[in-house]
Length: 294
Image 1: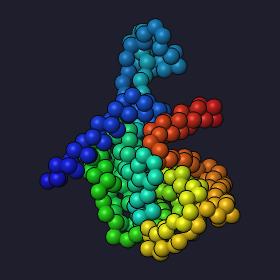
Image 2: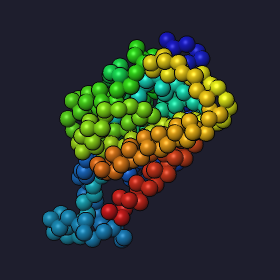
Image 3: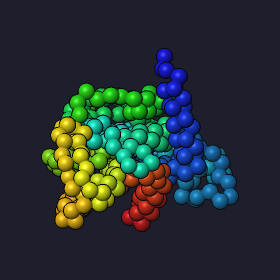
Image 4: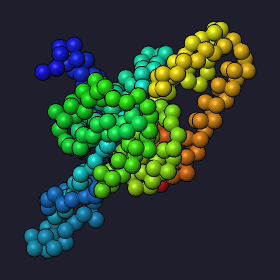
């Protein structure tokens, strides 16, 4: 039995996510992420306006007037949510922490999948795979995933995306859509990232905070690395230090963009400023337009 305050938080997130799916994301999700193919549903009499290419000539010849074949999309789609749960996600200077943004994005995507009768699963990783929930269908299952993402406490603080991606490539044997949610403050994940993008439909959701790109000039500040515990005293009043900090962040952004582009992996930057629903919706619209013109 969940404590009452946790149950209320999950319910609030469920309502917000469902409303977003119904109002904004449902149709875009279905059109952007197609199923495995089409399946025959029925034969029915031809009606004015039907596509003549759908006429079943064998049935038409037997019955003496036109009949058409109807097909439906075979979804049978698997969606995997790969969520970075390292301690660097427990940071945020705007509306939310990065971890909260990841949880809301995961909730939105899980309900999109469930509303389309797709299976959805979870891999939570720090510097190792901390939790694996195999993909299944159903609202009850989606709520379990959201609870896991919101309240799961990892045993290890570090980041190693390579571990999560290698694990994913071992357990997924069929085509799937993978949403990788991380701040990408990591090294050594490049090859498995590219390999995953080649095998699967990989979308990288990079969750960022403005303070990871620029620092205000507020004098001496003591900072602690959330993953290593290392404490540093920095002088933010020094213009050279702030410029070097911003240049390093820009270089890190550019490297990830080039890596994603090399394998045609979609990269979406999402801020802690509270606009993640709009950013996700814009990505769906952009991808739909791209598919329509490809």
